[in-house]
Amino acid sequence: MTACIFCKIIEGTIPSMKVYEDEHVYAFMDIMPATKGHVLLIPKTHCENIYDMTEQQASQLFTVAPKIANAIQAEFNPKGMNLLQNNGAFAGQAVFHFHLHFIPRYDETDGFQLAVKTNDEAYTAEQITAFATGIRSQL
Ligand code: 5GP
Ligand code: ZN
Image (cartoon, rainbow, N blue to C red):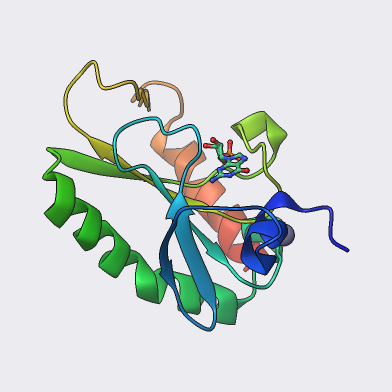
């Protein structure tokens, strides 16, 4: 038997509030929602995070993502929506079964904060070009 709580949710041994299910993916309400309508979308076959996700799992999951987002949008009419996905404990991943968060946004005090601080002085254009070269060499 698996120790993964999201695998247990898929198996039905842990209850969940289902939103959507097909052959490949499962969507359900986050038990501790950041905002009203916070949903998680997961692949049915276990993978820990983005690094060990297959192209097929990614394709199946992201094929469904717009449908989930549009359903949340239609139901709650939020002002915006953050799609969030954490990889590794340092990045805030607590459950090690890939999951995509759908977090509808209502106002500045809606309980969710995401601060992406861009810094146009941190790296030179030459350094950023070298970063791109390095990443390309890893593909
Ligand atoms: P992470 O920090 O790994 O990106 O997010 C894990 C999410 O899973 C959290 O938002 C947390 O509230 C949710 N979660 C953890 N355990 C359960 C559970 O047993 N059921 C449901 N529905 N959500 C869970
Ligand atoms: Zn799992």
